[in-house]
Length: 548
Image (cartoon, rainbow, N blue to C red; front, side):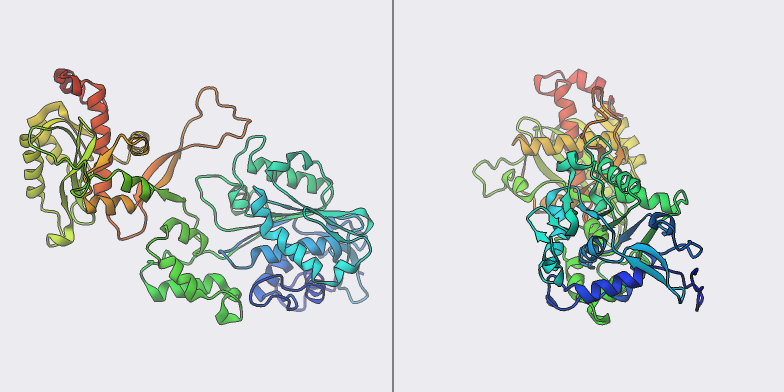
């Protein structure tokens, strides 16, 4: 007898109900404030389950499971602590013990499920620590249920033995030798972190597992947070294949952020969190206290890209600090330091300039070449000047710097200051060099020079608190992918490299002094390479535009 047909619009046949009934009758919550209580799927989780195990309505009763199933795999993208891994654990257990195989239709036209006769289930992740997110709940769920008393069941550190000699096990890229296993189901956790297409890369690892499952007529499931779009992870590639219509046999559940909420808007952030967490929110009977998550999202010490990705369901590039606070503090040579040495007229310097009109600040910083120490020359914040940078004052400060110090070179971002740069170049010639900070290849090199000089102790600063604040608010984000270097083994595990960009750690902060300091260091390095410290000033003037 075929499927009975829909009783309401949109209904479809699925083994999801049978699997949910088995899990809720068998398993218990493995951790958290509700530990030990019977497992219950939220409506959101059940909805994903029903779609993931959807059947073809026209499937004959004797069809193989792989032929009867509408989808060969599924992907669930949800924010941090939304319950992804415990749900994945229940599904792995269902594939080890529960009614996941299609067994035809009953007399009423309802689908029937049965256990797999010889299951081999794997929990996969990029590394062993990540597999624990799903593997540890699996172990607890088996120990705390009637499953542990079944003949042949044994819970070990790195495997769960099943009746009939089958098993469950965790897998990561450190266990590539076991990828030939005859897996019937693979649960992949944090597929958004599985990157790299080399032979030992995360993408290759995940693809191999999926191929192996396909060969066994099995299925797979991915759970992940949103990913960094510059990394081209397994999750990203799978999701884009579905979104672009290249794949129609993978189910995806992804409740995307409705808008980019301002992080300082309490009501908007909380409302968006409640929407994104859905049934997992305590306001809807779940376990996630969204007010607590809002505090994490709005914490000034949290990186904006990370909180938007992990909590607000935004696909955004990850960031990291420009400089670790301890490294920056160690480079300080302020008035209280025994090596404090103020800038004096006549000092040989290189200048860095980053300008704006009203939205951001304008900054002028100097690098003294004899000891490679940064010194503040000027910072103009629009809010302190009626909402706009006083451009004549900035022009006067630049002119004063050239008059007071022996300026070897000035690197200046021309954005919105092109007319002034033309005027300065007319006065000081090729010592004034345009340095557009939007050119990723050049900015990447400048950032690397700055960070390396700090890490090696070659670069110090005068302790100016404004620069310290701007450096702390500067993050590094990935830009375009770098071309492969000669000799790179593209089949190996080498990670993909990207150009680095300096960005604001959060909306509303200023980083212009930091950018000016980076440009000053770059200008100083170029000037030194061209002979500024050995008196070969003519060469500096003649070749000062090489970077332009």
